[in-house]
Amino acid sequence: MAYTSHGRHEKMMYGGIKLYAGTACPTLAQKIADYLHLNLNERDIIEFPNENLFVKLHTSVRGQDCYVMQTTSPPVHRNLMELLILIQTLRLDSAARITAVIPYLCYARSDKKDQPRVPITARLVADMIQTAGADRYITMDLHAGQIQGFFSIPGDVLSAFSLQLDYLKSLRPNMIDPVVVTADLGFAKKGRNYAAALDVPMAFIEKRRAGNDAKAKALNLIGNVHERDVIIVDDEVDTGGSMVEAVNLLKENGAGDIYISFVHPSLSANAAEKLGALPVKQFITTDTIPISKEKEAHFTGRLRILTISKLIGEVIRRANEGRSVGELFNE
Image 1 (cartoon, rainbow, N blue to C red):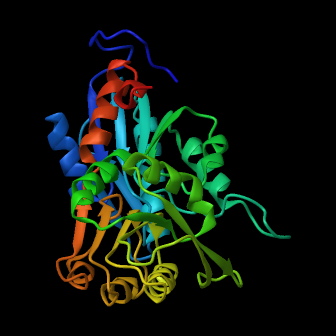
Image 2: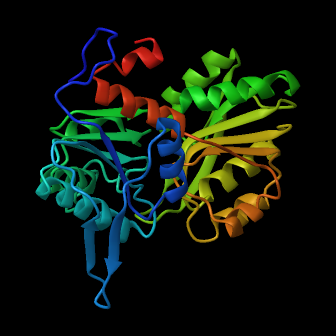
């Protein structure tokens, strides 16, 4: 990565920070701008009757260090096209460097050919971001680590682990013999990190996906949760089906209070309604994807949203100044 190891704060070869945002996560973008004590630069994003998009910048970005903030949650294709067009607009206006800031990267689950005659769409998305003109990218908690290899430009893949861990530690004294549980074996390695940091044991739920849709069936619990409080950890909750199966299975095995902690609140279709009906004490997530007031209401005050704005804001500052991002995590 193009960072220097010294601690000086002088600017590198790029100009000042210019922040631009699409329409997908305006609140998060404003929080990032506030952290940096900067304004979001004005731009027009117009949708014509034929659904084509038009972007126009209000001021020049020639020679500037530009950051385009856009999550790619639903409507996925509208938000992805906004991101690509904004990047190309900045490139054609001679920006010195363009960084795509994508809190949630779409198609991250399509990361390999796990059956015949299927695409690797995550690679396609990476190619499009680069072709549009991005020089760097910043994203959060990719579903699979190998997606970093789909990009040939440098990037920072950040994690909400420290944010969620600090909050879970604050809850820890009020829990009874807590145990960390992962809703599937694929998240087991990251689940171990939570268990080790909280100094608690682990359990796993084995599930099997029956087809190419989003449905999955929880099959078996590996570990002991009887009369213990449970912290379920995952990277993303989409339809909520896996979480419903997990909570029901844990309750059948005598679990006490249940906490669910996840990074990306996709909450498609009626997921919020299904989750809100579960006997869960608290849901912990982040603002990588905005949650509507209607969806939030289903959680009846049990939803805690941790903001990633300070983390991303600090990474933007360090990238602009040519300072190490790893130092934030003692790396």
